[in-house]
Structure formats: C-alpha cells, structure tokens
Length: 595
Picture (cartoon, rainbow, N blue to C red):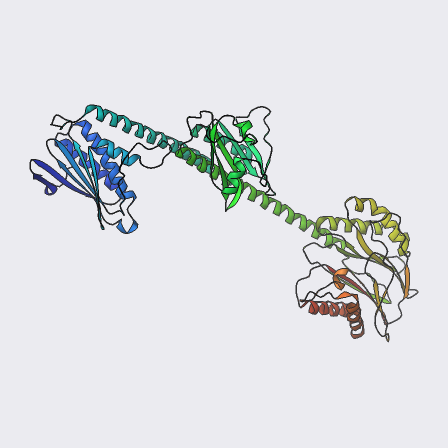
C-alpha cells in the first residue's frame, strides 16, 4: 500500500514519508511493510530493504511492547528520509523510555533480552535515542549499498554484522521452535488434566518430552512424601539398571542441591566450577555433568523437585530451556495435585459409605420395640455424638415373662465399634440358658470375645440386668460399666449399686459378681453409659455421678411412667449442656415397678 502523497516531502535531494500506526503489533507490522514498499519504489536494493525491515520491526515492536496503558491510545510514528547515499528513519513512541547502552553486544544464549537492540545496532550505521517527557525518538541511519557513495563503508564489517545477526536470529528461531513444541505438548497434556491418570505414567511421558525439547541427558523427579518430611524418587531418566536413589529427608544436613532448592525456593545450578558435592545422591545419577534443580510448589506448598542434567560441561542450559523446565514441571504439579484431590474425594466417599453402613448396623441392633414385662415398665433412648457411636442396648424376652436388659459401650467408634456391638448382641442372645445368671452370662461372653477384642486392642464395658417379675427383683452384673442407679419412694435419694468388674476383652478368666436388688412398687432403676455422667456444661465442668444421682432422683419423683421419665431426664441433661452438641454418646434404660 502506497503512503499518502501528502505525507511525502522532498528536501535537499531527499524524499521523506511519515507513517502513523495504532499502538498494536498488527498495525506497526503493517506500517513497516508499507515503509519497505515505499523504499522499494524508490529503487532501494534488496539488501537494504531486508535490513531496514528487520530494524524497523524491532523498533516498532518495542514501542508497542513497552507502552503503558495510558499511552495505548497514542500512535507510533515512523518517519523515513531517503537520500542518494543514505537512509534515515525516526521511530517515535510514548513509552517511559530507557537509557541506550554504551555498548550493544551479542547477548549470551541464555539471556532473554537484548537481541532486539543488537539487531538494530547491527543493521544500521548509527543509532541515537532521544528521550522526552512525553515521547521518545529512535533515530537510525544506514548508508545505501545499492551503488551510491557509501562514505568509506567496510564490506568486512557488514559481513561480521550480518553473521552476528544471523546467529541472533538462529537463536530466536530455536527458541520459537522449542516454544512451538512446548505448546503442542501442553495442549496434549491439557486433555489429560483431571482424568484418572496414573501419576507415574503421566510424569514419565511429560518428562521424556521435556528431556527432548530441552536437550537434557538426565532427569531426576522427586515428590514430597505424604507426611511432608521426605523427597521420594518418582523417576530417574534414563532408567539406569540398578540405580536406586534414596529418599532425602528435608531436615538432613548433608549437601544436596535438591534439599537446598526446596528450602530456599529457588533454582540451584551446578557445573564444573560448582560441582555436585560428593555426598549428594545426584552424583550417582548425573556424574560429571552440569544442570539445574527446580523445586516446584502449588498454593505455596512444596510438591517436589525436578533436576535436569547435561553431559556437555561447556553447554549449560539456556534461560529459555530453564523456562521450559518451569513450564513442564509446574504443569505436572497441577496434575499431581488433581490426582491427590481425586484420591482424597474417593477416600471421603468410601469413608462416608462405611459410616452409613455402620449407622445401619447400629440401628438394626437396637430393639424396634421394648418387650412387655409387667409389673415392670421399660423405656430407652440412644443418642450418638457422631454419625456412628459405640453405645448399644438390647432387651430380650426370657420366655417366662422375664426380660434380659443389656447396655454396653464399645471402645471406639465407626465400623469396628458397630461390628463388635453386633457380635456382642449375637453372643449374648446365643446363651438364653444363662439369662437368669448375669454374672455367668458375662463371664461366658468374655471368654468368647476375649481373643478377638484383645488382638485389635479393643474392649467393651457392659451391664446385664435380669428382670424377675415373679419375685419383683432385678439381678445385675457389670463388666466395667457404670453402676445401676435405684430410687425408691420415700428414700432420701437415689443410690448406686453393683461392682464394676473388668471390661470384656481385658482378661480371659474374669468372674463377675451378680447383685440382687428388690424393686418394690413405685421404685425406679436406671441403666446408662458414661456419656450421661460425663456430660459437660459450657464451663467444661463434668456432671459426675453425684449430680446424676440427684438429677435421677428428681426425675423419678416427678414422673409417673418411664416414657415421661426418659424425656424429663434427657431435657435436664440438655439444659446442663446448655444445648451444646454432644461430645459422647448417651444411652439409658429406665425400669419402673408400676403401682
């Protein structure tokens, strides 16, 4: 596209053009193409056209790249003046400006900046950079090499400049190629993020791609252990036969670039001048090499370390290749965290299902309806502090009008407690011939369950009470359980009865002493678990047996049936806690001899 004729000026045998472009890469690129076309129309040779196009592209791109947000609405201006012997270009920008360096040399391979300035300097004869408060102007001059007088131009110098420029362009091309390969790999791996991919397989494929693109000879990938104390080896490439790198404890004091990188949260380099320490485990995987160790994090939490190594001591990794390391490994960290979160969610679902199964087991153990045992009336309640508790009660008709009551507390909670409660229920129900002898019943139950309970370090406290309606009495025995409470009309208060004995599962040959207690008309008895007597108020004070006796006596005196007594006592317990959530299961059974 030709420039507007109105913008073309002729002065002193020179012709000039002024172009304005919006402050974006597409617009300034179009403007540089327009400038090249204009110079071609003036007969400028192909060598000069190529040099000016590259120099103007670099200058105009910098004007866009470093423009602050407030200056994005202002144009980038290109003014080009062509004479018989030279060409001058002025690029005006609205950036904050910078100090043009005294010497512009070819930057190191690993450097991420400086190549643009070097190209501009190499492709022109002189450069001036004028800074102003509102705008800056880059002035470029170059002698024409298409037959005009060139004023002492040195072809050898041009050749050197072109060689250096080609080197810089080759480096930039290599970086673009690796960036393209990286993008292709990232797109491929993105499709796998969130999938149920084996971490080691995913890591193996990703790290092999990284090795190829970054031209690495060795890679060691370690992940932080579940307890957060060690770096454990996930991959060592190439897979040298027999090489086993030990786990690295983060608190170790021996020299290790991996531990240093993890502690300092920065890359650690090693080469011939700063080699790996002899005691560093990486020496076995990367002998006589140079490389870099990168510790990677997610949400500020260490995930692991990745170390790249190269045999050629004279060829360290470039900044671009280290950027590849960061990109690939940080991408891997996302997948690792995703897999761990998926595993945690799966484990949570399994646990929730197990708790639901245990809750179903626990509910199935409780009597759907308490048996009738005149003249005794019964009521019971079981409240769990969590979804699953260790408390359990049962009421078993004896066939002759009698009833056996069982109340127990299995140590622990969840599925194991619910299962042992089920086993206890089955064991007791399998010995109806001993119902009228609670002491013998507990002894036989202890002998049956002792082996299974002791090998998992569990025990059960239990109390069994045999109701004998013909004699108007109860026979009780306790295996380490809370005492039986009894209140009689006209008494000063309630009393605690019975001897506790050893819990089930502690000793195999324990004898349990039964207690016979008359229960005359109007009398009330209470069986309960320690969650009742150990209830706490907001100040943290425990109810304790003394206060429970008083609360039970008040309950028995102020109610006339067991259902009312149950609700009254539960309400008093709730008042004592000030309606705070339960911290332990509460189970109780009321027995009243009706008048």
